[in-house]
Length: 256
Image (tube, rainbow, N blue to C red; front, side, top):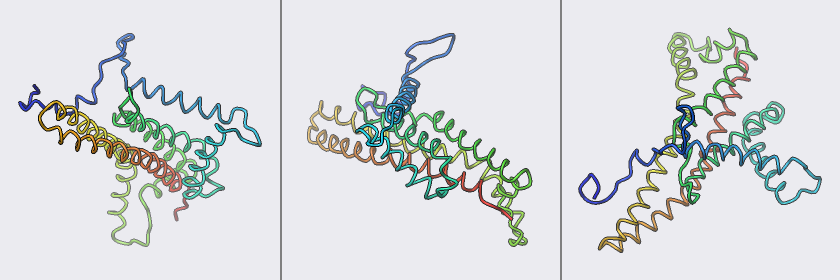
């Protein structure tokens, strides 16, 4: 019987904690790290195999790779940055998209059944990569004064409210932006996984009680949640890269 006294093992933070698979010199390597490592290998191996020996008449694997590559290039990067400025950023954005998407997809894959993005450390690192790129690019493009104007939204036409706007924009861009970029991905995957675990556990619990009909309803909800999660996983990867592109676009924009 569970701690809540009703016998139902309600999911909680315990669903996001894993015992180490092994420990090396005090460093603990767990399931989440393994999935992140496998994600990296899958992305690298797939695109290496798809484009390593590219042909004029593509094979099936190359066609799939080109379809995914073009989706990010044309549907996100070109739409945000334009073809001329965006082309140099395509490799980074394609890598981010498929890395984030695959980290999310583990949630519905048997045996794995856990979205890596629901552990805040991973979205934070990816958001930090985008943030550092944005800051460095802004400095390179505009210099120190231009960087200051860029991050504060300096516009002398605002008149008396300009100081207030500059303070808000400064904290929003330099402090809040990387936080929200990471948390948006983390929170969606965290909540989605928690709901999926809840309906899955509830189905098994009700099946072993007198509420068999309830088990059927819970199972249908589990299936619906899986389908919904597949949609959300792709959307979150899309949004993460779209925001990354918008930050790069802001770095390249001219401020007067």
